[in-house]
Image 1 (cartoon, rainbow, N blue to C red):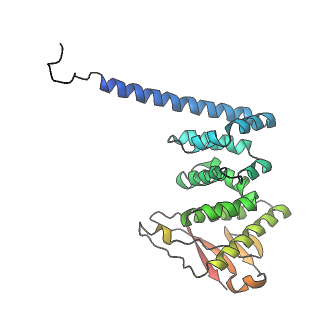
Image 2: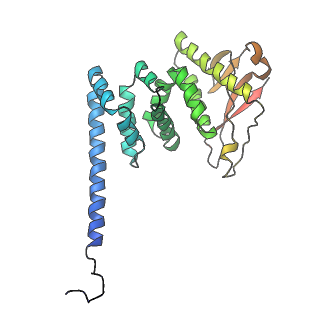
Image 3: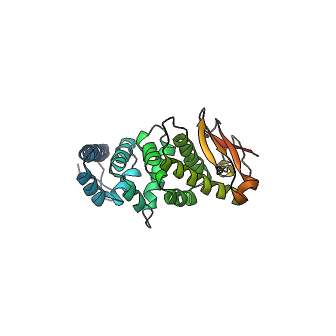
Length: 253
């Protein structure tokens, strides 16, 4: 039946249109998941495939997938990124515009704490480049800096034997963070459960010296030059509720 004169035509099948759109979006997500899994499989142990994927996917495709609303797509993207990374490619993250990839990896870890691949990207690759850690730290919010420091503690607290190269890396991180602490030593760490107090949390930094792990805690022994007055001797991880997985509390000499 034709609509009456002066009345808009009656819309039919709107629910069907919405269902079709949802179905198409679902198909796109499934396709992306399968594609990323395929890329991860062909990249595993194959340097040529890793280089080809990197050349085509970095940084745009990685950024698209890291910010996708589907958690599995984000996880599979982190898997591919981890598989393709090496020391040379990590340094490419320092180039203008590319640092965003590393920032999103940290965001993924912070928001999806069960994401093993984002954890491995940071601990096995990003932390091996002190220049990248400095660049990341400068771009992070206070809460994100706490997350980065947690990851550094996780790496330092591993029970695996530490090589001299790894120890040198830890010392560079400690020296940089001690410098940050010296500059901001007037800041006070506030442990609070207030929902709007996120920006009040200041991540206290590691002090320089000989680092070793003991019962999951990082000890920094010794002082260097002008840092003596603010050298951090010990860092303890404290569990805090209401939005904080853990904060870093300093014990100063």
